[in-house]
Length: 92
Image: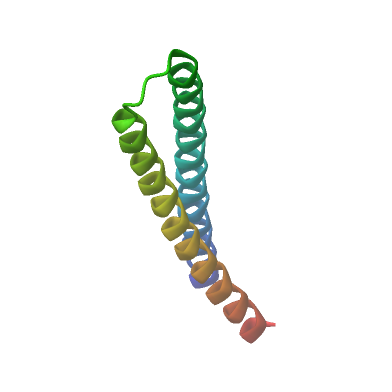
């Protein structure tokens, strides 16, 4: 019975990491969308000869924050997977 409980716990840990990976993907998709909007806006302003790009710079800052958050989440998942690998080697 103890083994079954341990396996369920390991399954739950893996599910949490899968959820974190979904969050990472969501951050990356958001960043890609914002980059596309910024690119289109800059192209339009370049055609119009508009020099004010402050909103685009703010958007780029948002993209950076999204990517930084995704990177930190990815590091957490990587650390978990490395630890799980060590545990698996010990149990082998």
